[in-house]
Length: 238
Image (tube, rainbow, N blue to C red):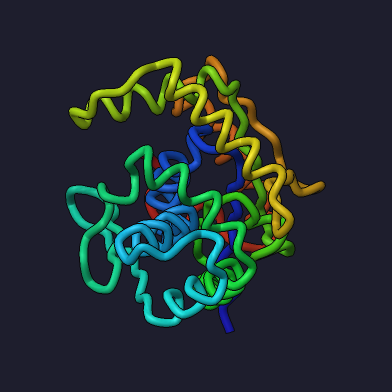
């Protein structure tokens, strides 16, 4: 029986580069990329559409029971499907971003999505990114990373991303929203944003995507050797 491929957990605050790096890492390894933050955003989007308050635990629980969240890779990039609808752009608005932390603080939402995340990743060969992958979802993941960057750096990245999409945004307001999201993620009662003790911390402030990716690949190669796996299963470059 062949050795199971790795489970790779990437955690960190909003705007630290988790989504970009998890996609690149998954592509190089031939792994499945699971954006768990997008799953919470999808729940927040649906709650907004159906006027379900983030404080309405029962309502959110019922909402989660009827949701189907899937990931689909296309030539244009990874897509997030909510009940069959492509919501990849809709879940990235500032309004949904702020609502997501409040929705994610609901225990019933976290329970439902953690269950789904575990079922998607338990066979290995996955890169999962979020805020509690290495501490809650897969505490025994073979490779764990915690990506960091200053709030101003992350806010600036987010500002440029939104401007590129044609949205009218203010830089200082975007930075303030990042700081607000940090405070909410760190203070919530259930599964707050924490760095796992065995996670490799990488501060990406001032670093290029390529530099951070190379650091991560060095760790992954070492974990593969430790697990008795051959070096890099498919593909070797971005």
